[in-house]
Each structure stands twice: as C-alpha cells, then as structure tokens.
Image 1 (cartoon, helix red, strand yellow):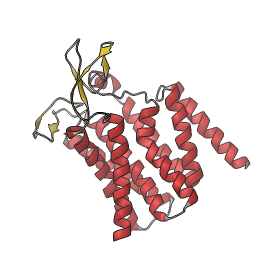
Image 2 (cartoon, rainbow, N blue to C red):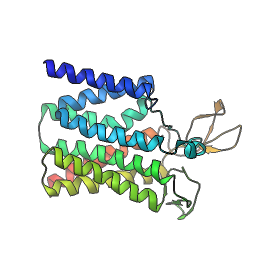
Image 3 (tube, rainbow, N blue to C red):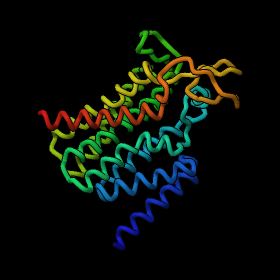
Image 4 (cartoon, helix red, strand yellow):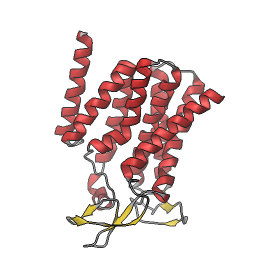
Length: 261
C-alpha cells in the first residue's frame, strides 16, 4: 500500500514537472497522470519506465531545434506542449490495455501495450526528426516533393527515425519483461507498422484546413484567431484521432497475429 502511494505521488510529480517544463498543458498533465496510473496498475514499475522512455525521448526530440520547427508548427495541429487530447491520442490505448491486463493477465495484452508505445514513439520520432531533413519529403499520394510538416509525407531521415523509435521501445520492452526474441520482432515490426498506418491515414483521411486570413494550409481548426475552412479529410479525423487509431490498430493487428501464428 505504501509503495503504491509513493509511486502514484511520483506519477503526479512527473505530471507537474511536465507542466512546469511546458511539455504538458495543465489538462495534459492531468491526462498524463491518469495514463501513468493505469499503466502502473497494469504493468507495474516496468510499464512506467517504458512509458517514461517514450515520453522523455519524444519530449526531447520535440524541443530539439525548436526554433527551426516554428514555421512548421503553423501547419501542424500539435506543438511542443501537449494537451489532454494529444496525451490520450498517444497513451490512451496503452492505458486501456493496461486496465484490461490488470483483470486478465494474458501476454497478448502485454504485447499490445508495448506495440502501442512503439507505434507512438515511431510516429513521434518520425515527425520530430524527419522535419529536420534538408530535402523536401515525398507525399505518398503523388510521390512528389511537398512542404515539410505535411501529413502523409515521408523522407529517408523520418523513416530511419521511425524505425529507431520502434526499435528502442521493442528492445526496452523485451528486456524489462523478459520476452522471447520472437516477441521483440513482433513489437518492432508492428510498432513501425503503426507509423505507416498513421502516414496513410494522414494522407487520405486526416482533415486539412486553409486559413481564411493568411491562406496557409494547416491542421489547425483555428488560425490567425479565426475559424479555418476545411478543404480535405473526413469529419472528426484530426491528428489526434489518427494518432490514436494508428497505435490501436497496430496493437490489435499484433495481437491477432500472435493468436493466428
């Protein structure tokens, strides 16, 4: 009981620290505490460490060369400071699987949990590092160069970062939970697959707006303090929805693969 109270206190302090460092908004910090608590009850301290690896490395890359990324942040719906929607988009499915595992301790839920984090880490590293590429990325719908920060765009640097992001979580997860080598490869592959799903959904289904004031294409619903006009994408499918669905779908596919194979 005392250990649980200490861990929860540490989780709360971590949320406060994220808020003070401007990595999290106030509601983002609350959401992070919820996700952290769910992960702790499901997978203990090891699960928290894995979640921490994702959060710390992702936040570090988000702030890395932030001055260079400022122009691209006008296009992107997310910034360096994450709100509750962005926290739940990246950690909500992991929290859900943690709660399920608490009641039904089957290894398939553990693999799904790690795949969720691997997918989120892969996507975040691809976005944050890929935008630093000196060359314009390629848009997967036309296979032509496009502006940096466009959803559905890929680059060699971004793809390499995505592979490394998934690899890090797969290695750490397999190490902490003493998983067989086959599970390591499953996590790595499906974690990276989550990034691919994110890219495809970003290109074909994610909403894109145009600012009525400055004319820039952006993922933000409000730009230049006025409501932007939607020019592409499905209703409700914004960046947060894409992030949540890509990680969740990658986890589900990994769990189905385990059962079939």
